[in-house]
Each structure stands twice: as C-alpha cells, then as structure tokens.
Amino acid sequence: MSEGCRAGCGACCIAPSISSAIPGMPEGKPAGVRCVQLDEDNLCRLFGDPSRPRVCERFNFDTSVCGEHREEALATLTWLEEDTR
Image (tube, rainbow, N blue to C red; front, side):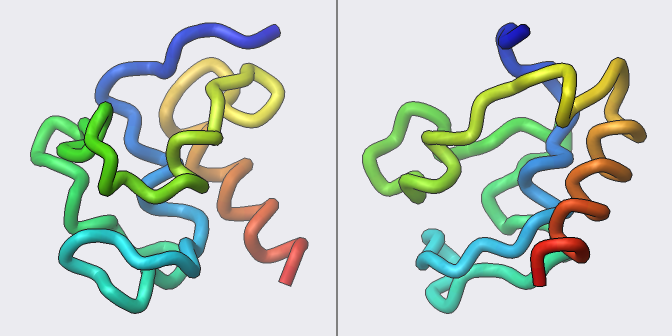
C-alpha cells in the first residue's frame, strides 16, 4: 500500500546509489553516502525542483520497502542495493 513519504526519514537519500547527476554531486552518489541535497532535518532540498533527479522523483513510499520506521527503511534499502549489484 502506497502512502505519502515519511517526513524526516531520508533513507532513500542515503542507502541507494544514484548514478545520475545531482546538483552538488555531478557524478551521482555512491550507496551509503548522504546526498548533499538532504538537509539537517532529512528533507530533500530539491523536492519539487526541476533539477531533482528523475530517479528520485519516481521513488514512492511503500511500506514493503520503507517499513514502519526510518531504521527499517535504511536496512531494507541497503539490502536491496547490495543484493542488486
């Protein structure tokens, strides 16, 4: 079941690698590295901005991936990243 993103989570901006350019990270970002566009409250500075990478725009919150809390999301996204290498 899809819901709105969990504000302040930021797991999808840390755990997975992103191969496309991100403002401030022209080569993308490796897995496990915090995106430079993730603010101190774990909110995306590019949300709603046309320069936000398409892969980020397309990611949707889903409890099967994001779990019940941030730690579950980080663990699942980290596992998925490692399992799909």
